[in-house]
Every structure is written in C-alpha cells, then in structure tokens.
Image (cartoon, rainbow, N blue to C red; front, side):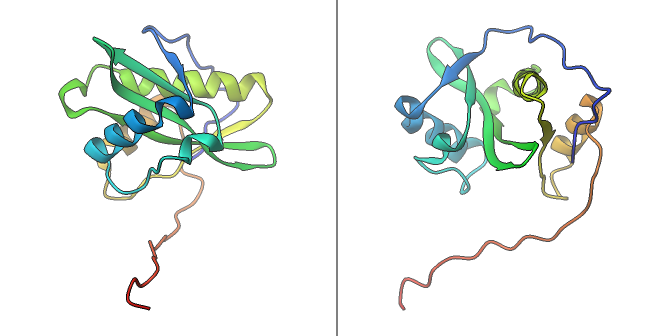
Length: 144
C-alpha cells in the first residue's frame, strides 16, 4: 500500500519519542507481545523508529525498514494490546509519513491480507493498494 502525494499528514496529537538501538530490548519485547516473530534486536538499525510511552513503558512503536530509491517502508507498527484503539498507531504512521514527505520519499507498507483491522486503518489514513503479493517466511533447518 502507498500513501498518495495529495494526502497531507497531520501533526501528531500525542507525545512521540525517537527510539534507537538503546531501546532495542523493549522494542523486541513489545513486538513479541503485539505482533510476534518479525522484529529482531538489530531491526531498528534499518531506519528511524518512534515510540509512545505510558508511565515510562513503551506501549506503541513504528519505524522504517526497507528503503528503495524514492520509497521508504513504514514497518514495525504495533501497539500493546491494553492500549489499542487510542489512535497511537495512526499518530506514529503520520509521524513517519511527515519525515518521508520532508525527504521527498513516498511512504509505503505491506500488510497481511488477514489483518483486516490494520488494512482498515491504513485505508482510513489514505493509503491505497498498489498491488497484492504473496510472501512466504522461510528459515534455516536447524538439523541441517
């Protein structure tokens, strides 16, 4: 999904903090809770990451992963289950989209077809389906 040029990201309405590799342990813990399996300790080195805290606990985050010429992927967007439906993910997406607009980049993301709630959010924010692809997660056979 891509965010068309005519969509202007609004200013975030919540306090958003920059995250770095110093926050990697809590970032992995949050993604393991909210969306397990796809975020590792060094993933945050792939781009800018932002987070939202409540009582010093990281409760939502989002960042960048794949960079293509002129395009930056929004990735790792997740919210602690106890803090969902408060607009945190939308605010983080808008923050990243503002960075991309500033740098002349197109914001894009991918989402599993079964993740209806996320798709509904992205469509509400103005993202459009660019194409449908099938991805398969592969791994090394530990017995080999």
